[in-house]
Image 1 (cartoon, rainbow, N blue to C red):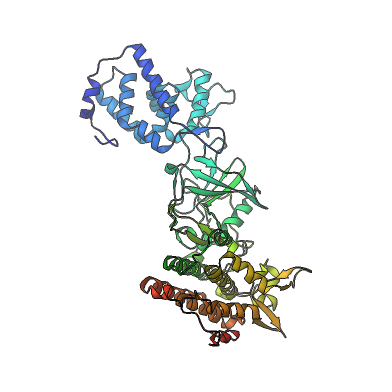
Image 2 (image 1 turned 120 degrees about the horizontal axis):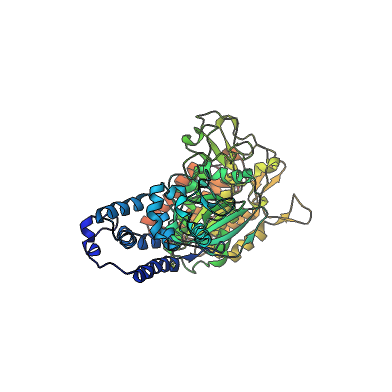
Length: 571
């Protein structure tokens, strides 16, 4: 028998059962209430409990509703009870469930005849606390007038337990304002990690209470960011880059899964990362010999980072066709969420653009600390995925306004900043390409030497800081006579890597790409991100088809001299 629909004939055995006496009826009533209450799960975000959707569907199905109606109304025709059960399942299952919990199943007919269904929830107490009333109209619920105060209060309490929300972005990013009594479906939470503008906790959501359009799969853990500011503008500032880039269906950019307000605070839900790329480098030691899987993973993730950056640099035209007045969020009813301001002026977006213009983006802070490391499975050989995150310095422009921003207007990470930032030149998308080159060179360093090699490389680049007295500057370039050049220590490091006994053809190609295409001091000659993606894609394809590309050791001879050409890189 299909639990989603039934015919009268399916219940001839129930109808033929002898009628219960009053004591049996009361026992059955207690049994259903006890079953539902015992199925409640404590929420880790508060002091309440909730009934997960899978347990609700298992306990309250059409045969169960019919059986309970038969018990409550033994004199009624089977056909009427059959129709009533169908009606309850389609419009009033939550009402029925609450009534069963508070042992008032016999009131369900009165509720239906009064027109009270699930759309009326949540009900509230009247001002004098004597009645249950409709929340908006304050219309009293006549069917509950005869109840005791205890039963009325129990109804109010348990209505939240059986209506824990489903978190989803399947129909686009949906901002929701939750009632202070809402039972959030979080089953585990970690300690808070405090930040300047927000706190972050690792949370586990009940698997039947989320459905996200994310190609990162369905991780058991999520990151819940609680903003310190209660102002809608704070939420808009945090989420505008995500909604503009559209990372929910992108495998290379950290997706924004959901936003909501709860008890006066704004929350942002994202996938949980085990750490940053720096954490991965520190915690994971590369093998002492060439490993084709390790090389393939590095080639794949480097390609994905480039693809993610390309997504930011070249936004799809449909993004810029959003009218200036159209909100980025909808509430749970599909109605534009007007409480959130969507002005782009302060979020780094060109607010002067006209409808239909294509947007161009610049991340502005590509560095290992802003590349998150997500573990996709428990398999030891699965090293996880790397995603671009932290869009605090991200800017969006139209063709008319590209490269207008001066370096003094942004915060910078000196290690990965590009030469034009020191020359008071406009910052463009080429800034990101340089930063990516620095990151990939450190990635190759990890592959050859492990994390100690990255630290040694930083020491080799060290020079007095141009920003703070007694500070160290480990940038990858320097300015000589007003001309930017790659630091000699960087060129020597690349040369030594080419000569390393474990250097494979893959590593040679990887270093060539970095030195000849990315770490080019003159930003006009630097490769476009599309070129970088294409070359990394070719490397990735070769890793899959040619095992010798990663396994064959082919170190350059110190007498070869080829690495010296990196002093004058060209595109």
